[in-house]
Image (tube, rainbow, N blue to C red; front, side, top):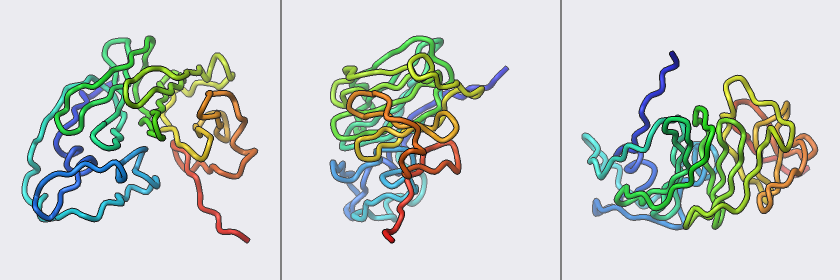
Length: 220
């Protein structure tokens, strides 16, 4: 039987990823500095925050809140005081938004036929994008969770579902939504979800692991 651990949002994620601890020991939320995608703004796991005091984190972290949101392996992303992730309960999947200060649920978008939840959402402007384990891509309004568009990669674009389901977190590059699918990755128009083409047609994506990586190529 495959083991699925309960996914809890706990103080460690809030303290390290969501909050800026300033020199006075208080917590500040910033709209400019956030964690909008898997492994942070540049995909390297490095925060751009500077106005914080490391000594405020000495000892055991202070639990601000925790919320049992279901099961899954999706990480959290945030901007301002809004935190987003994906989860699953029974056979239904959800994309949810929580208040980062209180942990209170702000909205929840549910979908059927959920498998293992593995990918982490990505925030871009007024929208949040998410990929289900069975290959449905969602574009939602980040403020209220209303659906802008959705695309089924398997049914609409003939993408083969991996045996481990879709696990690569989506990445935004310009007007494109990059996904690890097919043999070299694919790109969709982020405004409409329409097929742009295999990523190999644009030298933007390499695939050293399960998530798209956009390299910085110096000009010649």
